[in-house]
Image 1 (tube, rainbow, N blue to C red):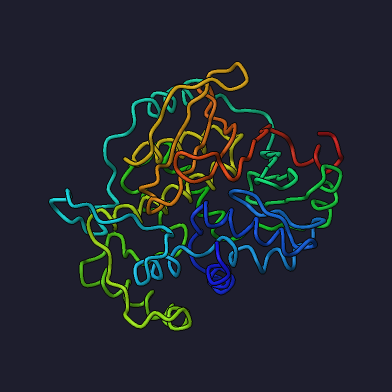
Image 2 (cartoon, rainbow, N blue to C red; image 1 turned 45 degrees about the vertical axis):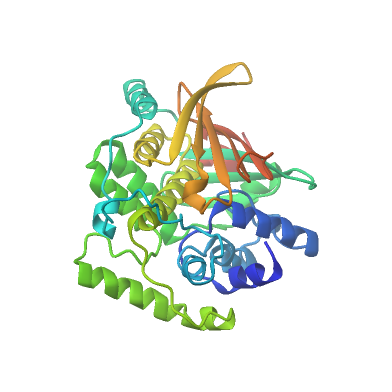
Length: 359
């Protein structure tokens, strides 16, 4: 990510998530330039020493570039979240049709069935997720994240600091977090078309899903108007055209992928959330699923192909083939070694035990 792109990221505060590869490059650049800056991880940011203020202000600023960066990509060719229009697309779908669920990937559908069959209520009232992220040339960074069933969210960079964050009520949850998790829960058993729309709409977007063609255009024009200042600063004089066809499909599925994986990262120890997320991901044509083995255990490798990211990168998510628990996530250029790898250690806990330091 160059200086101009970093500047763009810094200006986009309240829009949808930035594509993973641009986020990771931004994060690596920031780490190198700001030794005391707040480190972050693939799907969530971690606060420094459990402090909320600057972390909370910067979370959307770093993660959020789905609309603005997407518009810039359309106008100036910057690779952000759009896929190139396909010459083989015979019928250009509308935002409404592109949001509808195609047939699900059979491997993920089967795993969802297994998760539901072996559900049983797990003890505890929260998910504890320990992330270890390694970016090329950087020291591995570990974060401890607690996601409670009631919607609270605590993150620290040391295990011992987590009880203090809870006691100090340093809850970092935002409305978007609750919307993503709610969409995942609904997707576990609800209508899949409706669930896709709910997850996509968990973060702001210019699609106007479910609206008339005129209303969809109005939604796009409104988003474009809100980003006009940034586009002007970047030297974009010709407003980008509203995407159609494969480009629109890719943009919508990009939001679905990122929001779904974010929900999985939050509620990984909750079987209902895992089932819903995997059911949603199963509808994304540009995500391939293959059998694999990790640490001697059967896993599934989910590859969000470069078509979701305008050919610039891909994200590979590895999950347990038995439980759907996330094992690792890797981001990098297609066909090359990943620039960033995050491993997950997930467990079901009680907030009371964590607060007492018993975890």
